[in-house]
Length: 355
Image 1 (cartoon, rainbow, N blue to C red):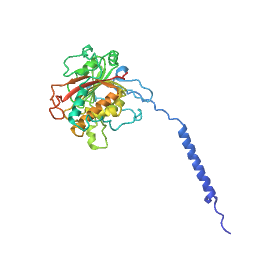
Image 2: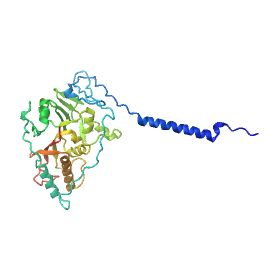
Image 3: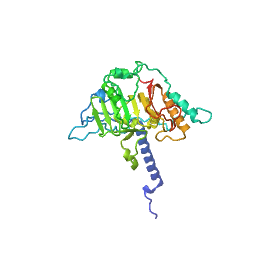
Image 4: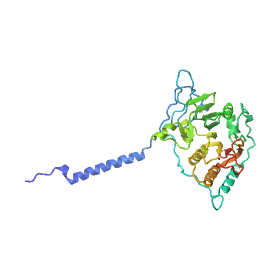
């Protein structure tokens, strides 16, 4: 007499087991899709060090945003504490990043350095909007000892003068070992929150007075990759968008930059990542005696690239209101004495949509 086959080895039992497993997976998937995710809570503010008043050192943000506390450094017998603790990942929604700017058509039917240079120089020498009040003498503590003019627009129709009066303005200054900081001191004495970024500063974060901070950071057009050994040497180099995110700052009233030919790639990064929309006024020193860091192509292509960058600013509603041609610098244009051009210009724009 043949043995009876066990029930668990039968095909019907296996089919029932498979159906039960499939039903369980469907139930779990439906629960995950219908249950809302819990929003992360804002971490507590840093307790170490001495915090600034909320109007200067911190900003009020909705849940999930971090408050930043700046710390006075330089006390004897204690290591300088960190200035700005990093924000938790995922705290800021990332925007879609463009990879290239839109190049403008050539200035002539065939590429020509002469036509490209004349178009570019005319563009940077022609104001696009008038500004009647650029004199900083009205600012408290201003000194005429500044080595070059850093013009900002103080007309009543733009918000900067109102934010200065209400002590709510913020200035970011990007530099590379430049001792000319009279503009930053004047803005700080007027009540603006001023942050100067310079990799040559000895301490990580130094506070001078109530409104002026120095940070040992270099602003670049890319963040360093810690997995690459060569990038570890540039661990104090970050993009401006990364700095804004870490500091918890949503807006900059004035961005001043004197970064010795790195300005073209930094400006490109600000445009491609839409960081420029968080800025009220730009004051940039541009250098045209050579293409600049990581700007490639022949001379006519380089000038076309410069011109296209500035036209991108115009598309973002920035208008050029002041140009300063530095005659104390060599009169060079792409390593040639040509076009009656200086090797250095200081350009000032105002964001006409800035509130």
